[in-house]
Image 1 (cartoon, rainbow, N blue to C red):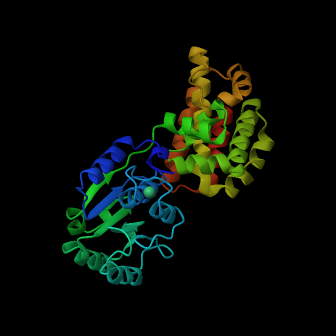
Image 2 (cartoon, rainbow, N blue to C red):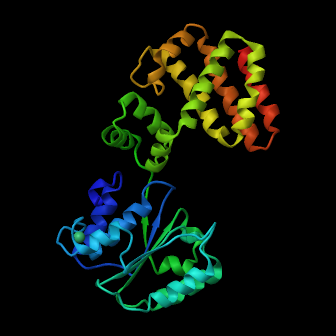
Length: 325
Ligand SMILES: [Zn+2]
């Protein structure tokens, strides 16, 4: 693949291509942005384009591009965290390595992932390199938050800011590349948080689907007023405690859909469009006021959990309050 396969970062890619073509490359870049939006992917494609032997800036067939694709290019190095962080030892190795001239390319490129996990002493080692970088060297620091890097590193690097990918583009990508129906793609897009990686993970995750189905069943029981089963559902919440934000999102989005359907009768903007039959049943059973109240109850629960109110108590209260609506 090349730059053309990357979605949502057109301006960044134009900028990087122009820098290559006009030979105005910086010695250090900071690629900063949320998780899973494609920073690493762009950094690899950038490295590939810089060292590509053809004029197309990333051709798939020249020996350089083939090696980058196979992850064995001697002049394109990716430093990943060892465990939770980039270790001093790794930066020591990098300090030595960068002084050796490239083997077969004009540029020797180092991509440091999760670069904000470097310790201060590792960052100081990096800073020494940045103060006097070898002419052939390029370093790409990938990070979610550049403020965890030393200001002196930031000031010596060109910062490129990655934004979340628009939902629409994620949906289109899923439809095109995964053969997903558009109503399903819209659900994955909605939960993707602007991250293609997350959208794909969700699509591939049976657990996500299971959790969503479970929430819809619970809402069904709430609306039917089935109290005993409701308390049974506590086991589900406890088991999925770490996914509580997502689970509360399922609730909120469901009630928002009900509100939209009750107020406008429009289907076009529904996020749970694949569940239109269930939505239609529910909308006939709850009042407009009841739906609004339900949204408030879920949002209050979200706040309580953020304030560290007891988990089980918060969820039980939410379920009982929802039922009383
Ligand atoms: Zn090439």
